[in-house]
Image: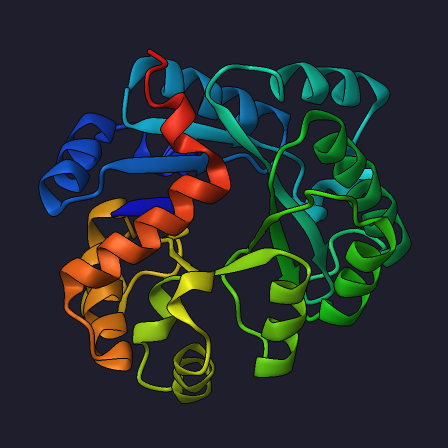
Length: 260
């Protein structure tokens, strides 16, 4: 399995990171992509990727911080994007739920980061909450040959899912698929071919139902796989195999696994 979206670069894991990574290994999680939400967390993701063979990094500025980006940050972000174990740009996008930054500024920062992704031919990790219409419009406006990425923590309807897929994106779904009240999400997932899906935890957030109330971690990916196994009527091993192949292809991890 591959956890395609984790935040082991956050302080939540500072005291027991070695144990968390070992539990992930024992659970069958081969690789973990740590995702940046600002410049410091992106730098931390890169540092961890250099320290642990199983970790990779994504760098970017979350829409919550769109109003805080300086010119120096842009220079730094572009440099970080060129580091060897950086496999994506993200998480980037739009968030109209918490509105920590004005919508117009979020859109400007989103577009600028998409331009960086195009320049360096990197997949993008999209955060989109209650903003799918604007997010999809921007992606359609700026799309380029080879544009690819993932709609992380997907929670839209089937039509929105199809629009992302038509643009060349995959969808990732984590702990929420295990929640008792997530009936609509499971119905949407069931109607999407598994070749368009990837696993994620978004840890330390969105802990699967069996561990609800605890800090989430990559080892808990197994609970998501169990739910997917019921949805698709496939063995957990087959779920792991297919979603891993999807992630390897999107992030080109087969090219990067020889890095230290």
